[in-house]
Length: 317
Length: 249
Image 1 (cartoon, helix red, strand yellow):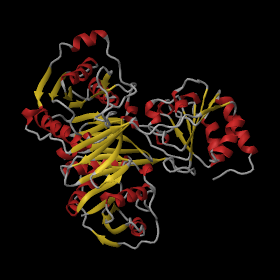
Image 2 (spheres, rainbow over the protein chains, first blue to last red; image 1 turned 180 degrees about the vertical axis):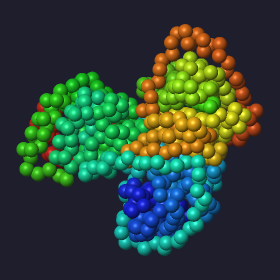
Image 3 (cartoon, rainbow over the protein chains, first blue to last red; image 1 turned 135 degrees about the horizontal axis):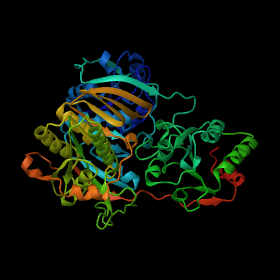
């Protein structure tokens, strides 16, 4: 039986991690179908049909799907599930919210946040904030899997022409009402997919001081991250949080500034290719994962860093 | 309004865990255990709602071995009224835990069930959503703000893109984010008082729930170690290394 991928989108376009989830799905079985549940989501449907790994696209439209409420989405997937061996989506807040609701309806034990497909029934996943890796075999007939997007490369986005099929909507769940979404708009790259991330921690001492980070991020074309301590202190909004309960990032370069390196922060960034730590406490745990450590006062180091960057003839973008 | 709060006993968040040499799991003997951190937020929120006069009773529940009762006792010390301990040996999958909680909800008939959004041991992030599916109740996951309004809750949720606000009718499930509140510490007199509060013990086997495992943990291993890095003397050296050695800028 085929694998069903639940596409994440904003009704206008696919969200980028859908491409990573499609790769993971195609490693389970080459026969991957994908479903878009939304409202006026024809563009996202078309985009999905162009992914070469997708063999068929299912489209479900209704007004009550506009805001991605799990209570409305789950019955659609549960009904479709009889034709599929695996249900797959990203382990971001969309998939984390939705997939267990589906799994419980199907009486399936979900395998969360996998980082590797070992075989169609066996998966590798981090536990204890990534301080151990568990190999898990699922014995359920139907498998519900969420994948860690940064552990899979995005699939090709053009060249495919999957058949598109309309599917009937399910009834509205009336006990949950969407009120509003406050998305923070930014011209910078998305934190989850950026090539470079510059993050600040409690050492920044104030939200104002984050401009030292912003300046460097702009120069490098980087996304801005933060530790939980910095978010809790109100220096920066929650969508910047990197860590066990925030976002997991795997950039080419991660620069941690004024971040001590709590276990839960390391969980979100220690797979980055190159890690730089700038901290005045030479004993800070962040140095244990850093390729390049600079023991210095960040309020002196960051302006110098900017100065040195300005001296360079070229900067990779 | 009656609030049931589920708490889990896990390895303390400050402990650097060790993987067992035989690959069968992580070392838990003689390791400091605590309440799963966001479960503390769940208890705190329930107690605050009761203190604001909007709830009449807070019941703390845990599912686990004998020692898991410590987490219920701690919840009683910070303001829960009574406790329930569903006793079970070994580790249950979230699906089994949610089926047990469903049975308890059927009996206790709470208006709200709170719990942490994720346990920091298995990092599954499933139980609350599964329980709401089994009960066909609304779910407000990753809650960082809760307003109780008559028979509705307005909940702000932490999502990848920022914040989302939803309104749910009770009965409902809320899974709590660490940012929801600042859990209080138990005072010594309250710890003493908590010892007298009742904890009902139920054997999981008496609930008639199939808790048999569906997943096999074949192996637990240490993640690959990073190569040791170097310390640079100054910012100029750092930038040169990033440019010419790591070639990332």
